Image (tube, rainbow, N blue to C red):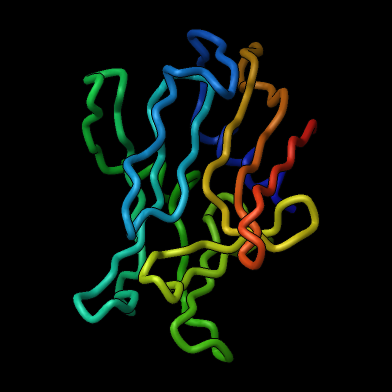
Length: 182
């Protein structure tokens, strides 16, 4: 279930909330668009962004040894953003991932986050050469674009107020959205 995925990310990665912001807050810049961008995560903690990006080879296919990478864009340090790798704890508890080829889908990879292994993403390169990550949003398959997590500070761990999933229908191109209250 998608909500649990995001809940796990928040609980494992955020231990203090300095300010609250709305999901459309202009302080939350979108990750730079590229053929490699899969999706990104914003949290109301700050404007820093967690980016999931495909590793595309020169022949236009996903690198089978390392099909994707995850990193921070730290906007709180620099308004233009500074790329910073996730640390070891983040990689094993929250934002890391496991990837393996789908047996029955050549060129597609199954990705699961270490923080929530029950749901998986389908990684692939579309016909226009862009990396995509399909994921279920509001009961239908969608190309996931971003996730927003709104949480409140509690005594020890943050309490998730809501999670928003944003994507696009891969057939119609229509926006797909789901707001989840835990």
